[in-house]
Amino acid sequence: MTQVPQTGEMPLPRSQTAPAQSDVNADLGLSGAVADASEERFLNRDGSFNVRRQRAGWESINLYGELLTASWPRFFGVMVVAYLGLNFLFAACYDLLGPVALSEMPRAGLARFMACFFFSVQTFGTIGFGHVYPANTAANMVVTVEAFVGLLAVALATGILFARFSRPVHRVLFSDVAVFAPYRGGRALMFRVMNGHRTHLVDLSTEVVLTHFEEVKGVQVKKFHPLALERDSVTFFPTSWTIVHPITEASPLWGQTLETLSADDAEVLVVLRAIDDASHQQIHARSSYKASEMVWDARFRSIHSRDAQGHLLADVSRLSDIERVDLPAPRAEELSVRIAEPH
Image (tube, rainbow, N blue to C red):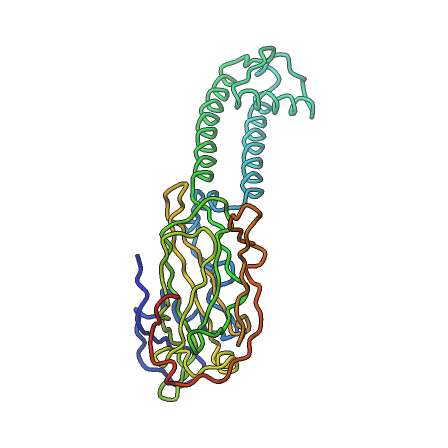
C-alpha cells in the first residue's frame, strides 16, 4: 500500500524562474504536470483523475479491464456488436462458398445471405434446426471453425459476466461540501461520508491531504500536507462518519480563510479504504473538495431519527444538509492541542 508522504513540494510553471529540486516522493503519484493549470482539480468529485493518456499504442488497450469497468449498457452493447459481427463474418464465408455449400438454401441475393446468417446463428449457439446442413467439405470446415470460435466466445463472455458481478462495487457517498465548523472552542474542517449500499462496510480508514500553492524562495510551488485527523479509522460504518481535522497551530489550515485558500488554489484530497462485508474484498473511494466547495462557520445537521419502535434511522438525502453558525475569532491558546480526543 502506498504511504502518504509527510511533506512535499512540487514545482509548477507559475513562474519562469526555475524552482528548487522537488521531492519526487511527495507528489502522491500525481506528478507536477497535473497541476500546470491552477483551475483544474486533481481529483473529480467522482474520484476520477483529470489525466488522459495519448499515443500509448495498441499495447495500452486492456480489453479485459475495459469490459470489467464499462457501464452495463456499454458492456452489453459491445457484446451484441461482437455477437452480430462474428455471425455476419461466418455468414459471408458460407455465402462465398456458393449455392451448393448448404442444403435447402435460396440460390442468390439478400435472401441467401440472410439464410446463411441465421444458419451461422444456429451453429454458433449449437442449436441446429436440422433442415439446413453443410453439403460439402469446405462448408463442414467453416462449421468446424465456427463451432470452436463459438465455444471460446461463450466461455469468455460467461467469465467476464461472472467477474463483473463478483468484483466489489462501492457506493460511498461524500457530502457535497466540507465545512469549517465549531470544534472544542475552535474550528475544524469536516466533511461527511456514508455508505449508499445496503451491504455493510467494515474496517474503514481514510487519508486526507491538503494541496495548495505556496511561495518558496520567490517561486510558487505546489505543496502537499497530510491533515491529522481526530480519528482516521473506524471499525463499523452502519450510518455516517464525519471526518474531522482539528485546526490547531500545527495545522496547515491555521490562519487560512476561504479567500486565501481560493487564491492558493487549495484542494483537499480524500482517499477512503474499507472492506466489503459481503465479498470480503477491499474497496477504494476517492473525492476532493476545492475552496468553492467549502463553507465557513457552518455545521452538518443530524441525519438521525428514530421510528415508532425506537429503531435508529439514517436519512441519506440529508447527508449534505448544513446550518450556519456564528463564531467569534478563535483564540490561539484554545487551539494548542494538535489532535483532540474523539468526542
